Image (cartoon, rainbow, N blue to C red; front, side):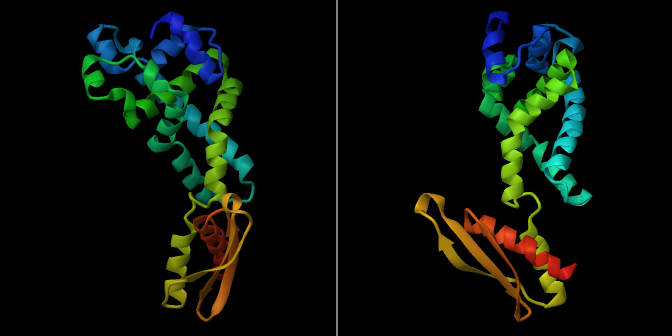
Length: 230
C-alpha cells in the first residue's frame, strides 16, 4: 500500500488519521521492514505491544458496562475470548486488513495476508495507532464499532461462559449423573424460531431457558439451573 491508498483503508476503519504514517507503520510486518532495512521503528511490533494493553483496558471497561451483574471470573473469560487471536483476526478480515499489509517476500509466498496471527497483530497495532493519533476516546469508539456486536452475540448465546460444562460438573458432583436437556416448545416462523429447553437432574427440573437455537437455549437453561447449586 502507498500513501494514496490510505484514504481507502481509512474509510473501512471509519477513522481519518492526523498522522497517516502511524497507520502505515501499523500495517508493516517485520519481514517487510527487514527486507527494506527500515529498522525497529519501521514495523508494527512496538505498536502491537501498546495496542494489546489499550485493547485489554478498553474491552474491560466496555464489558463491565455491558454485563453489570457478571462476577470477575466471567468478565475475565469474556475478555480473554474477545482479545484472542481468533476474535481479532475475525475483525481484521471483516475490515479487509490483509489486503493492505506490507509483507516480505517470504510471507507473501506463504499466504501471510490470510494468517490469523498476522491479522490479529495488525489489528492490535491499528488500535495503538488510533490511540496515539487521537487518544482513548477515538480508540474506544473504534473498538465499540467493531467489537460490540460480536461481544453481545457471545454474551446472549452463553458462548463465552460455557454454562453447560459448569452444570455438567455440578450435577455429577451432587447427583452422580449428567443433566438431561429437553426441548419443550418451539415457536415462531422457520427463519425466526425460538426454542425453549428444560433441564432435569436428580429427579427434578433445575431450570428453563430459551434462545434462537437449541444450543443457545441450552446455554441459557444451564445458566438458570446453576442457581440451584449456589
